[in-house]
Image 1 (cartoon, helix red, strand yellow):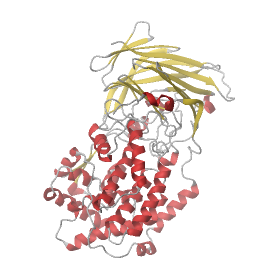
Image 2: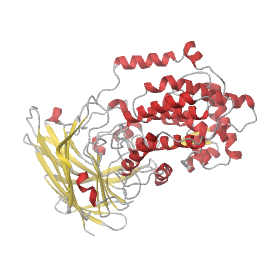
Image 3: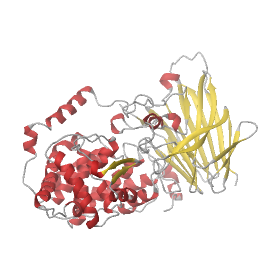
Length: 578
């Protein structure tokens, strides 16, 4: 699809002084909220809650919806070989004990959500896949069918599980064992009754949406479920209103979360198709907003830029979800609430984070990436963020994975070797950037974005202001990074700062003799010149997490300087030589 229409020029302009504010964004759950959540979970184990889960045993599903999204072939093939493989974490199928499951949280979620059914069905016939699915199902039922516990009965995983059980019923309900079949169907019904009471406790985002999708799917698939279906639809509409900005971006500000939302709604839509019912209008309306926002985060290689702990993923995964959505549209070029700004010209694409980070309670693994950008030339990435803090292979040391969340792992300015927003060990974000001021102008000759944030104002007494200008042919990108005095912070000495530009995979950097410039040779032969003033340029090692979650060694350009009390300015230009 075309990325730009001249008629969008005025719509893309943003008046000077536009502000995005992170209200209460550094606060996670309060003590009272944590205690309430704890008590809520303890109540799950009481006889009263157990009685609430009892009810009529379903005899069969009303229909079997299709799974519209093709699974991961590699993971599916590994399942056929007797292993579960998630980002390099291997687990033998024969050795899975759900009573003592000592695996990573990501692997536990993969198993309890039954996402693996999608992967298995993508490579196996029913005859070959059913024995594997049934064996794992029996092991899960033995431990968790009657006992409510976490994470197995966590509302977001339960919602996903109901959808995967419905879509892949042929794999888990092919047995002639009537007792087993009844146990599966009853576990689904009990799970739906639990979801009715638990899902609204989840914070806004993909988890709450997944839970309400599960409620609605259960209403569609289990006999007598019309009241639950209607309640699920109302809950889902509320969840989407709280989880998606008006411009279509996820409140979690993550490309992976955005893709997940699209996949959830697309999968739920198949439940209506199986029943020959029309889904509520808000499902199609939300998908029509979600997809262009996602496309706005994609480079010329058709994979995602790296934001808020996510990596590029692979083209197959992204294409499968977008194709299944059925939405055909152009990328969203600027999102006023979501905050990602996109400039495209010629073969060049620039994507900038021009908003405060997500609210602490909404995302695990958030990053201090405010005012960072990525830049690509056709299918080749030139400037990137390291990315992938929540998508890396399991063998990567936890300390290094957490380092990918830091401001230094992003292509932006860093003051005093400090994060622009505090990063906590529990995966949340603390104090720092609370306000971003943004303006954008479009003309026939160039696109200009100017933005500033206050993440360093309280600690160092500076605002960071960044201006980016991309010419209409996409061959010239100019930037200014300024530290402007702010607040009443007393500064007795100059404050060190660096501006980092992490280079894409395979980009070769050669410094010039004057120490102020570098030649960047891109795979495929393109040559770009980088020149700066206002600091000293160096070339250092870096890394970039690829679409498979594997860290790849790369380089980075680093401009080093010091800011006196009156502030500092660094100017730089990136120009295509051939």
